[in-house]
Image (cartoon, rainbow, N blue to C red; front, side):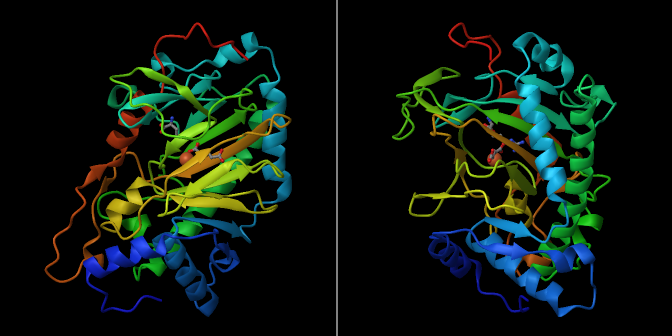
Length: 367
Ligand SMILES: N=C(N)NCCCC[C@H](N)C(=O)O
Ligand SMILES: O=C(O)CCC(=O)C(=O)O
Ligand SMILES: [Fe+2]
């Protein structure tokens, strides 16, 4: 566990820079958190491992999460079948401003900001969020477009989301403890409580076809002015950090494609390990910890021309209205917060509204 007298923040910044030269991602068994064994020293050990992983890497695998393989595999299998449907069937649940950005996005519709320009992501996906009917309050509020015509897929997704909410809450209890806070800190946080019920969760069901032969996947893309798309580089998903608290990635086995950037700028593979989720912290954790935990850049590059990959990341987030600010108990006496408070919902809106190309591109062949 963390001790009360903490190093001055300059030291902690230096330590973070050194420590972020990781070559591999830690694997953390969270079974003690899932069992919620309050008295157990196993919970303290797990919390200490989470603390080190969040501070030094920002990414880790979790095992012992209790979600049966049948659920993680089932949702990927049903997703794969759904993506094989004809484009016209998939377009019936197409997303746009009128669907609160919930539903299907075809190959190339998602873009990632890059040094002032934009780069097209080579994936198709279904985006779902916590349902919120007060549509006037946000452009992302609305109902989901569930794949109603595939009841097995819809059922698998709902079961998967319930399970992920439970795991997300348990891991956040461990992270709170690792920070020296009450385990339920994020559940009762002053700026907005985050529980399995209140989390403004997101899930993306993603299909990554192989990259086109000869596509450039390395090198620095040209900065493009305004919203111009840089076509010199093709990545399955461009380099980014996630927007909220905690991401859980359920990925196809045997296809290493997710890559995590260390402080030397090297890409470290987050290759699939059966029975685990890859976990990472998002932008809100940087604010809560006043920069001690920074979200790690990552990208997806599916270069194997014989493999098409499915992943189902689940984003466990704060409530939509949460006012996220540095946690006072984590500051040194007299230390001024350096991270400005953020309303999570506003941050999410700004990301989502810049993620889609508004005009369909003639050079994209609908999958
Ligand atoms: N909900 C989350 N975190 N989604 C992450 C997607 C990252 C890619 C997106 N085009 C972007 O530029 O952010
Ligand atoms: O597909 C993956 O492995 C991760 C995708 C991702 O980083 C995201 O959607 O935020
Ligand atoms: Fe991500």
